[in-house]
Length: 322
Image (tube, helix red, strand yellow):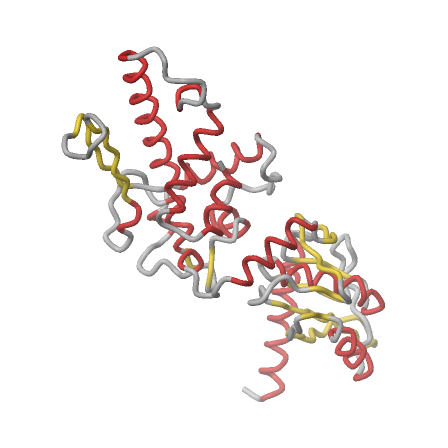
């Protein structure tokens, strides 16, 4: 097989892969531009990709998904490189030229790929952007501040490390879907338009290193009541003591499982204890646990649980779902 033959096969494979990608339309990680004349708007989207989960932008494709290609010269690539200087901190987008069969014209599509930036937020010409579904918008001030706080933490945080030895089969996928739907109902998440497990985990930022489960994914959605030796922090001990000391137990329980399951058990136990206390004395006080709003109880218990085991950033994500 000659070198030219190999190149043609590679080009056909690239074009086939491009056609497959664009068949699903624009998404949170994919956008189309008719030509590099839209390079300013394209860089805003690349900035949003870098602040999210990464993504790909294709020049030479209409918003409807029709591949039209464009003439690509050295000048075209130089102008793109010049535009890329507007990123702060700097990005190194990967550019791939894909020949498009268009009669006698030598047209190409340009596929530009960026990974999630290690230091966020990334801005373009002084403005940070984010991706919401298939649109790019200026990042809200609250999100910008959150990115700044996260960038101050080490990149080796426990929750973003790969969960070694864990596979998607170890997750309670029904819990994942139920959580997403409840978060949508409460207005905490936009409907992603899919219930595919990998897509949902990817959208929540719970996949790392080429779709490997993160420790946070396992913490949130591992199968309930299943002890994982590699994750001793997924255990919860609940106790009710006699009197004001810890010398004698009235009740003592221990559970294993995901964060949501442990939170539910903690709530049930707290309600049981509060009910027992009310039976003994009907004056628990205006600020007692039993009179606290249900949502406040969930957040208080969740914060106690997460703060004692995980990083503060994981607690923020957890509260965003519950």
